[in-house]
Image (cartoon, rainbow, N blue to C red; front, side):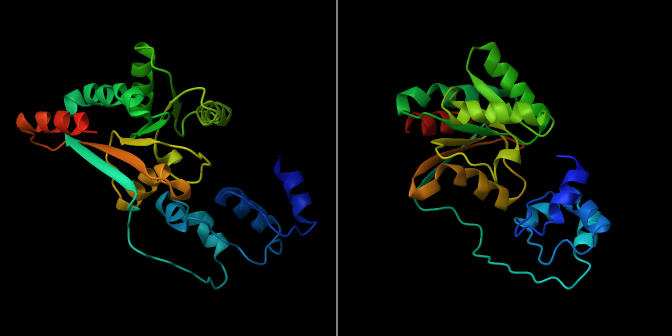
Length: 230
């Protein structure tokens, strides 16, 4: 929707306005009286990604901050595993994990990676071996992201390869397995990622591939053993 039509709609004083920080900043600058209360959902994420200019406009008046912090915890029903492997063979171990899905009755899985480049690389690799997967990252056009998400949610494809763009805010009702191909930098992001498997009181499985700087050969057998004991 273009900004003129949005401004006209706001003149009707709607009860609730849902907007991205950049667009609401422009609208407030043009019509300072359009908003009475502003609620920032997941404000920690907004603060992380460089919205300082927008927030300065949105918080010109006194802000009330509510913070409910219970620590970074995962639910008890979540089964969490990890394995050590050299970085150069991470792809091999990822494929090994994915090959176990059918035997374990896993219908859907998300592979989380750190960068859009890695997301694209993994999706191309899976396509090359004829393993159906959708890729979801910020450099994809919105309509392609929605199409990929729709195919995954409908069960047309069992795998979603994604950056942290998929760790929050997306309505994906059933995820059986989360694979951390890359360990997130922030503990909060880890909790959000693995929490994808535990919606509505369900249990789930999260597997993290860990690549220490120095990894002894014996660590390879540790991961193999861990995965075989699922």
